[in-house]
Every structure is written in structure tokens, then in C-alpha cells.
Length: 396
Image 1 (cartoon, rainbow, N blue to C red):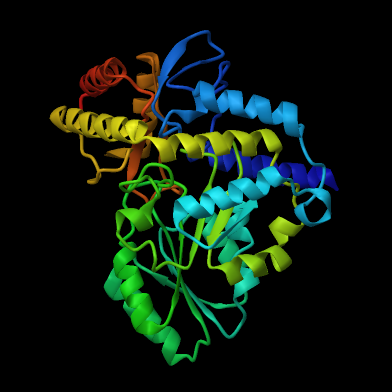
Image 2: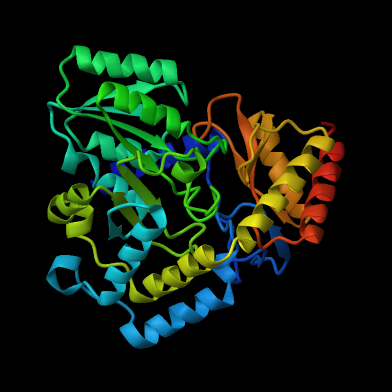
């Protein structure tokens, strides 16, 4: 039987390759950081990690994870409700709740799992979920698992969101849940969360947002999109990750209303049937959260680096998507050109990745760069110089 299936798989892989869409994985031979080593033996400047605050290589986070390993062990070999809950996990959940300004928090193996276990637990066929068209794949997949009626609104378009809320009411929805990314990962756009809350209050809806690309650095205290938009006390559910700004390892969470989290502990399948987040990861995340809470130094440096880098790219004549987020997309539009540009940048010692359809819409190919607090001014100047040389070499 596998012979026929193997031929089918080969044809699928060949189609992906012929379309120029094969995702090649570069082998990194060093720890994550502002500079990484490749299997070619070269060291390159890293502009494509989610290491926004540089905590993936921070010595205090590494030391905390090592101490967590020594004190709490390598893993629990269990799910939470059997014998997989340590006081360490409860401490992190409480610290996250305090930081985010919510009532309760529940940990998951990843934010993908948090989103995957959210919607089917809370919503039934009598309900409606209204989702931004650019939401992350984990939100889309989570929605697919639930039986609620599904509505989609144009990205950050409040008029269209209101139209979908009205349509859900017209069809008699019992409960309505609006769901959005806090920051849209391909564009760096920040959700208009305060206006979403306005509409939610007007139409009696709940509000959920995924803040993976904001928690730890967006907003005056780094608490995320709801702080940045001034609506911390108006949102109902937050999902997020420990795998980006908060240490860069793994693990995710859902944080929000007490009763929501209580029901997730009873019925959310990824929580009930997945091993507990490993103790070293939890210990490292606790230290990362402490660093973010105690000082604005890393956030300030990230803001300065982002402004400097954006200004430098604009001065070189590149087309950027507007914004202030450290996701800085350099628009090239043509997929082949974007791939050539990324390879040329690697030759210059700068590690960036090209994104094209179906990850982004047709004709919107880009180099998505991501700024980090770990980058020095010399690093950024070297990256800008390389962008300028490659631009000239490719005749752009």
C-alpha cells in the first residue's frame, strides 16, 4: 500500500519545490543569540528570531533554568491533574496573572495548544466566534475544532467587525466571542484592541486576543497589547507564549477570567492530555518575567533599536510596512526576488528569511526582519550596510 502513497507524497513534495515554496531549515550550531553559528562554519548576525528582549541568551535566565533542573528535575512524566503539578507551576501562573492584570492563568505546552484547547471548551453550536482574517494558524485551527458559527472580519477593520457582530445577532447567537492577534506576526500591525472592546461592550461579546508577539515588551510596562491600547481591564481572555520575549524556550498559557480558566482546567483537551511544562522551562520563565518586571532597560533598548533600524532602511529606499513594532517587514513583492535577496544577505553574514505565498498573500513577498534588544548599534549598522549592498547588487 505504501508504494502508491509514497508516489503521491513525492508528487506533493515536487509540486511544493517547483513552486519555490520548500521551507529549508538552516542548521544552527550554537545557542540562540544575536549572532549564531551555521554548519558552514560561519557566524552570522541573526535578524529573524523572536528573541525580542535577548533573554534566550541571558545568563540569569540560563542560570535559573539550570537551578530549576537541579531542584525540580527534568520533567514530570505526567499531566497536571494526575501528578504533574509542582508549586513551581502554580508560582508562574500567579506571576503571569499579576503581570497581565488578570484573575487566573493556566499553563500549556505551547500557545498553539492554548488556542487549540480554547474555543471548543467555551463555545457550543448556539454560539458565534468572530475572527480577524489575519489571525494565526493556531487560532484558525482552534476555531475549526469548535461547533460555533464562524464569522471573519477584514484585518483591523472595525466597520466589518461590527457588521459581523450584527449578523451573528441576526442569526440568534447565544454568546459571541471576538478573537484577534494582539500583533499580526507577518506585518507587525497592532490590533485596535480598545476599539474592539468598545464594539464588544456595545454588542455583548467576549474578547480574546493572542499576544505572543507583544507580551514582555509592548506597552509602558511590557504587559502587552491590552496595556498598549489602554484596555487592560476590558478584555476577557489572553493567550500567549513563553517561547518568544519571555525566555524563548517553550510553553504557553491562557490568562483571563477566573471561571474561564477553571473550565479550561476541567475540559481543555491539550491541557488534560499533554505533559506538564518542564520544570527548567518554568524556572527560566519565572526569571525572565522578573527581569521584565523589575526594569525597563531591555524594553527601552528594543524601542531604540527598532526606531534606528526602521529609519535606516527607509533612508536606503526600502518599502516598509508602517509601524513601530520590532517586526519590520521589507516589502519586495516578488517571491523569487525575496528568496534571492535572503540568500544574498546570508552571503553578507546577515541571517534573514524570505516569506511568500501561501504564508503571505500573492504579490506580498517580503523579508521579515525582527529586531532584538540583544543587537548592538554596530550590529544594526552592519545589517543596514549589507541591505544597501544587496539592494545595489540586485538592481533594486
